[in-house]
View 1 (spheres, helix red, strand yellow):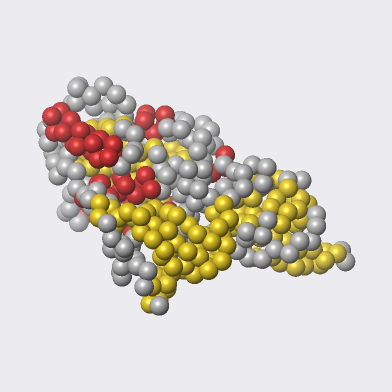
View 2 (cartoon, protein in one colour):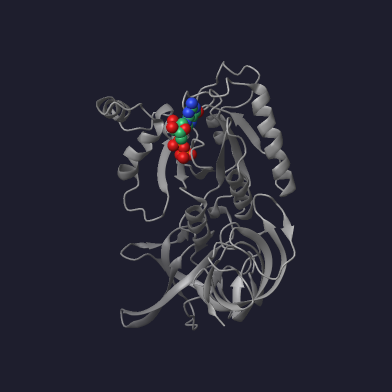
Length: 405
Ligand code: GDP
């Protein structure tokens, strides 16, 4: 058993079977607490309602997910290869909010499509969002194969239709697996009911995915949350504090802060209420002292310049998925939050507008709710950010509709 972890997200149109598949994964990997399956089955019998794998998820949410404040259920299951932390996003708004703000991160996704109902608008929209978020490893599960009598033609039709869509949005053909979450076919165990399918089960496929893109292996990025002064042994010292978004930092590294581009070497690394450390990495709330007392403020982005420098600019060209109630237009003012930076912004130009599920392109100077657009923002002052191609996490930002100008 390794200590390797992998975060995955499960998305799909409502009722296509996300919770059922999660319940099945937990049950079939023996990750459930002892007696839990029987307990839930018994509760169903008592209430004379049919057992659902989705109930397992509800029963576990409280136990496993304590203290988690994100709007998604997080549960885990283990295989011989690694531990998977799986996030079930109730809807794409919650999912996006979590992913964009960094409350949740995922290296891979399971996208569920109901074999009977077929590809829905949300199946496409979610696929588009995954590609925008930089999640390249998407396994499409064509679920409820039992409902369509394990019919290969039905499966092939969905695969062809969805592959065409992925091609149109520039995503490489992904793997597809015909499953039944309810019956357990091809989830943990290969199903003899679909002899026409001779490839991997969901678990085999997951174990085969690449975990190299985890944020630990990326370049160091830490948005500065604050600089705290304290006195130790008669020395005035300053700790630069924040949460590491990506990469690692160690004592002796030269770090630079952007937009100001001030530099110094890391003298010590310390966590609140913990011993000193030589190195710290992603997702840690950490702090470090510097060899020189340079003046840094909240909002700057700490990097290791020999790894890669971020962009610093007063303009951002970006692709976005608009969730605001009002149209995104040049008659309003916005706030952009990137890491701990916060600036006001105005829409300078709309390059292209696209409906995320129908892919219909429109030429327009404003963007409506649920449209994807490529736009340019003009910012009130310089900010530091990464280009989407280079980084998974820190290239994301949150845009808030501020007020009418
Ligand atoms: P979610 O909204 O995507 O989480 O969907 P659920 O997992 O709650 O499933 C919705 C309904 O479809 C439930 O009544 C499930 O029992 C049913 N369901 C899910 N997967 C399957 C399947 O593979 N076969 C059959 N027959 N029913 C399924």
